[in-house]
Picture (cartoon, each protein chain N blue to C red):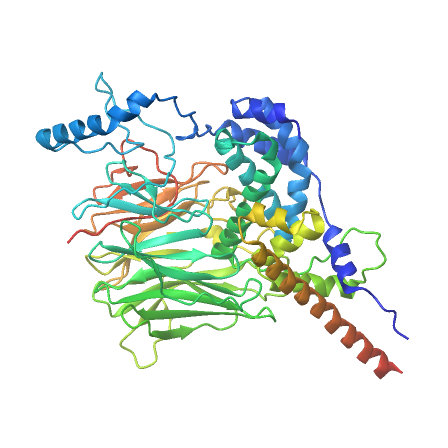
Length: 184
Length: 426
């Protein structure tokens, strides 16, 4: 992250902030999508997070930590987006009709189905930890600092989220095996 | 033979899937949005000045002198930060959207305050004169919303949202003595429970609220619940069918009936988002042996009812697009999201007379501008509502009086948010 851009943006330079958006935006979209499981909601959350970042940027004391701070705002924006959506529409996301765009042959359609359902069942708190750990590649202490929660809580959320995801896959495997036995 | 697979690796692969691109339209939207907002300058970010030891020694004495002078002069009140007041030439400064900052602002017994919710989920109090805006609760990281005053104006009930679950929270008007009224169900997984939209009964002893539960099979059920504030006991008045969701309960002045909005959804499992295909208002008679929501004639496409404190009239919003289906799949469908609107489908704020001859009066009609959550003032002479003038603007809180005067709720600050309610004063 270019520290100079952050400092310039703190002083009100909108071009510098625009450059920051371009430099960090794709990662934010990726994180928000994986937490919210919906691209439109994710983009709304990303937009809200950047507006919040712009408004509060002068209060950021350590420009070098801009991205971690931005991700904290993004997580809050994701929570707010999920909340707003539920309040007004009971927007319950189900599996997309089109399969996910991937060439990874390891994941079957059933895997995705089950994992998507498992993601819908775990809490947003757990989702956020899962995403920052497995997608963003942050360490547990880094996640604790980012989300401003104790390290033990991060471990607990990750543990339960992982259990839920494993359970979904194992349940799927049982169903598939039973079907194969019936066919045999 | 079954291949042995590492489930953790599958989870990692799954999380790597999906978009991670910054689209040009999003970059542009952020740029435009940022251009509309001013940066907040931190109050405490200034470097502490160097102070000599001599000054430090003199400081306590100076403080004593100052306090003595203050006592003698009397009546000197600390100025509330953020107050917008007359300038030297007599004009009034009008700040843009007030920025809630945590304060310890006291809420005096006879003072008129509005409680409302910002669109980013903060419950805020602001004096009726536009000063003293501050978050009701110190916790900013937990989304809050839809505060409702107790009839004596001493407390507020609101919802606190933790993401997957939400609970009701009762708090004094000054933000102290907060306590949970409903459990926070941490066992709940996914989008499975929503407890909210609380409304104090006219006698202040009960609170009506809605509870929406979505189980792991994506079956939605919704309940209208009345909670006894003193004991915490809940009484479920009605539970919906699997495709109905209740919302926005509001009490009749005599406390014998509750009006609600009902949204009928399509099947929950066939699209990327669930949209209401039908909306109307319904009445629940609390004196009935088996209370059940009965549709109120003439309220198709209605939402957000609020019962006039001084009579049998409901004010509500009629949203024609609310009942249109399907909504744009996967799209956030906030009431102020104008992508939901079509030209020629105006939103209305309607006042409906419940007794005698059915009669309705369309107070406000807006084509292309959502009207949101009208709420009567305690004297029943006016109601507040939210109005966004464009798709990318926040709803401005306005007030419409019985004489038809329509204006922002204060003269000195432009308040944006939803659900503004004026404090009842004994």
